[in-house]
Image 1 (spheres, rainbow, N blue to C red):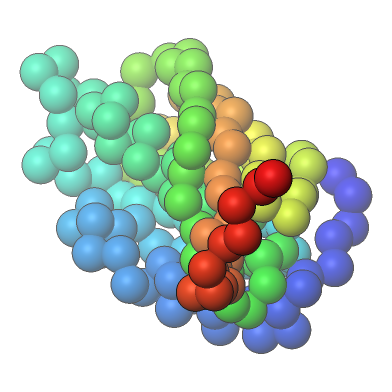
Image 2: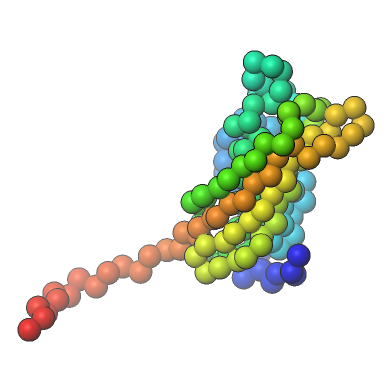
Length: 158
């Protein structure tokens, strides 16, 4: 992976504050484990409250962890005034989400002024083994402040 230079020297504090502002992540028990420019690693412990009918962690929960890991990784490269929003993702589920702990690792593949493309992987830690259980590709948008439109009347075209 290429080494990226963050546009915001305070990217770490900004990314943590953005993540901490998400009640959904607190509800799921997902925490930040590692941050670097263009990279994020999140983790969560197993909870029976997050499982589906077969006892595996629900695919929607795994997808939420992957999506957020992509978002945090992309956010580390955005300017101070930006916020972030996912505009597209694709998840591939590779194995049942069975484990005591789940790790979501994301990295920026292509940063852009408005759109950033990321890849992420989810791993399950179960009985001393680590299994790749899902992958994601995602596109995230930098939400930048808009400049107010001029209120001067337009001159009609001749």
